[in-house]
Image (cartoon, rainbow, N blue to C red; front, side, top):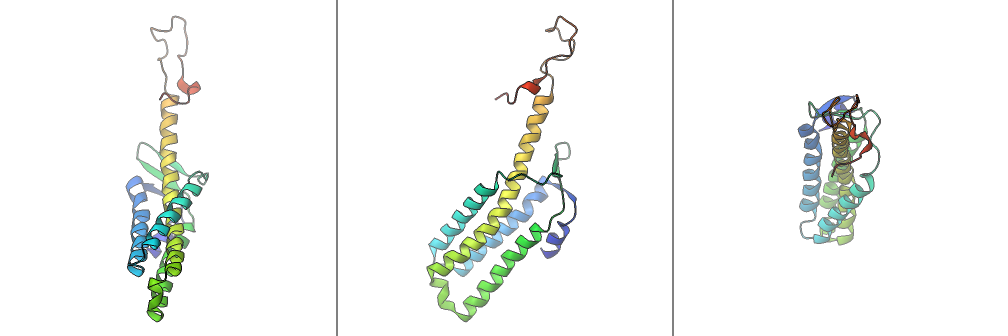
Length: 178
């Protein structure tokens, strides 16, 4: 995963399927970290879910980097390089390491709800950033589809519906058909 994070520091083209892979792996790893460390603390799981939801909601509307593009024909994204992904991966692994070391020295903390909730929130915040990024990229797909629909002719040039020589009506003035 470290090399995957380093690879994301360079500009790249990624398929939709591959784009989903890293956030899915990190979500499973983050959730496993909460469940394995704090098995008996239900509040930790709820705190993780709440943190993921809050962070994802807060970051969902942030703009993507200006060079980010979606190509509908290849169903792939062009993503500019960033070190953020590596920092998120290292953050989750660092939390997992610190929690493991702390619980090995103080096993009683595993049943301490305050400790469990704090760690679960940290996991949830980092995971929420991963999920929000993917969500923003899927909004880009929706925007590209809207552009395709609004950029097409409603009636072709020299249509039988247009008696005058005209270039046809464009749907560009209509933002959505539905």
